[in-house]
View 1: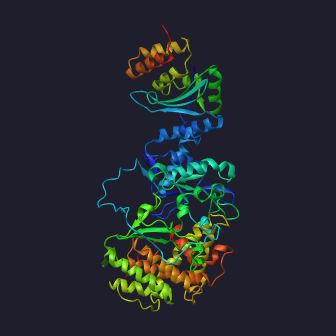
View 2: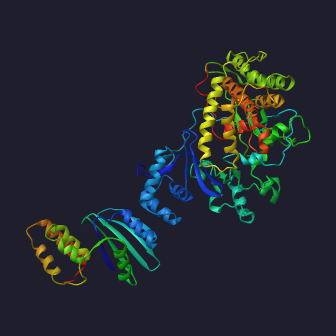
View 3: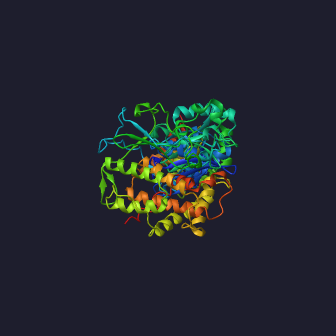
Length: 456
Length: 145
C-alpha cells in the first residue's frame, strides 16, 4: 500500500446514487475532474480510511463494519484510488492562521433584496432533480433519517447521506449530501414534491432548500440578496407579484437572516481583469446601473455582456454599455462545448436514462455540435433578467475570477442556451428554460473553468 | 490447543480467502514487536484461531484453541496447504536448522522417538545455529523433563 495511513482527500465529493435501480457510489474530484464509480461495499471500506489507521487497523475497522474481505482488497482499493489522485496520507493538517482577516458581516448591515421580484415555485421539483449535493446539516439529517423508514425511499439508511466533502462529515462541519435516485433528491416523490415538506411543512426541509434560490453577497455597505437563476421558476416568476419574497419582508439587516446562511463577500479590491481592479463602492454603482439598465431596456443580453466585459476591462465602470456583436466569442463556445461533451460522455456511463443532469449534459453537447448559438433569442426578456439578477447580486464578482471574465462567460452561457433552443430538447418540463439548465449545469457538472485560459 | 504448520507458499491472501470461505471473523492483528511475531487472530465466542507469521523460524502456522481444537485444526488443514510431521522430517537432510525449528510446531505433545533423539542430537551439535534451533523447538513443544 502506497500510503501508510490513507485518507480520502477532503475536497473529493462522494455521492450515493441509485441509477436505474443499481446502487453505486460516485467520487468526484472537482480539482482534477476525475469521476470514479465504486461499489457501496468499497465506500464502507473507504469510510474507515480516516488518516489514522494503518493497514492492520484498516483490516480490523473493516471487520467491525462487516466490510472486511481481505487485506489484498484494501490495498488494491487504496492503490486504485491513489492512481486517480484522490488519496492522501495522514490526518488533515490543522488550519493555520488565515493570512488575511476573514471578512465578517456585521449584524446591522442592511439587506438589499433584488427589486420587484417574488418567487412563484411551480412545485414540479426541477431544482431537486439537478444537484449533486442537496445539503443537510447534521440535525436536519438526523431528523430526516428518523423519518426515512416510514417514507420507503428505496435507499438503505446507512447510505442515505454521505459527507459533503471527503469521507469525514465532522471535517466539513457535519454537513451531509443526500443520496440520489436517478439524479433526484431521495426525498423527492414521483409527483415532484418533497416528502419532508409533505410530512411536516416547509420548515421540515433543510435550510438550503428553504432559502433556495436566494444568494447573499456582502459588498461592504449592504448584503445584496439576489438569486441563482438555475431554475425555470425563477424566469417564470419574472414580472409576477403573487409569489414569495426571497427573504422575509420583515428582515432588514444581516441579523435577521437565518443563522447559518452563507454570505459571500465581494473581494476588496474587486478584480476587473488580470491587470485592473476597482473599489467595492465602484462595483456597487456598476452593479446597480447594470441591473437597472437591463431591466429597463431591450438590449441583446449576450451582446451587452460581451461589450460590458470590454468596458470593464478598460476600467470604464461608469460608461454606458453599447451592445455590439459578440465577435470573438467562438473560442469560448468551443471551449464550453468541449467541456460539455466530455462531461456528457462521462455521465452517460453511470447515470440512469431518466437522470436530468445526464440529459442536460447531452442536450448542451448536442446543441453546441449541431445547433445555432447565433440564432435570434426566443426568450430575450429572460436573458436580460438573468444578467440583471446576477449583476444586482454582484455574483460575477464573487466567483474567483475577474468581472470581465464573468461577463464573457455569461455571454457564452446565453448563446449556449440559444443553441439549445434550436435542437430537440429532452422530454422534460425543465427543458422550457434552457438558460436555467445551463446555469445549473455549470455549477453541478463542473463546467466552470472551461475558459480559464481564454482571457485576453 | 493445536498447531498447524502452513506450507511456505501460503501467504496472507490465501489465509484471507480461507477465512472468507469458512466465515472466520477477524478479531485482531498483533504486529511484530519486541521479538513477538506478527499474529492474525480470528475467532468466535468459544474459539480462537491465530495465524502466526513467525519471523524467528521463517514459518507461518496456525494455533487453534477451542473446546475441540482438533476439529478447528482439521478445518485449517482442509482449507490451506500444510506441512505434517512427516513432511518436516523429510526436510531434515536438505535444511536441518529450519526443519528442527519447525519440529517445535508440528512435534508431539510429549517426548516421542525419533523426535526426542533428533532434538537431543541437535542440542549437542557443534553448530550453534542447530543448537539454537533445538532449544527453540524444545521450548516451543513445552516438553517437561
